Amino acid sequence: MPELRSLVTKVRSKNAGPFWLTIDIFCGSNDAYKQVCSGLGTSHVAGVFKADTQTIKRFDIPDLNVVKFSLPRPTVQGAIGDRDMHGASWAALIGELVI
Image (cartoon, rainbow, N blue to C red):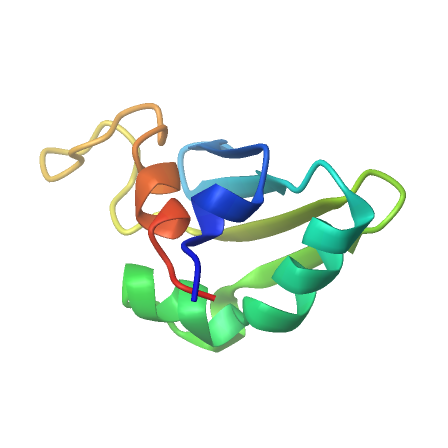
């Protein structure tokens, strides 16, 4: 079973304000999009971030072959415990998921 990053064109994460994080998965093709949609559940993402599935928002955008997740940041941006001020490093964790 392949890692997500080997199936898609790009996985990107970034801040969506100081309290939210957004992860964009650019699939590149319709086949990859269908595989990601069926193989990557909200529970997978919740497991990586140790988040409640009820707080994660998922957006499937078939016209763009993009799957997007938005979730509360583990710590507020810029707080003492914030290890990623821009939210960019979270993409690597999602890219390693096997689907």
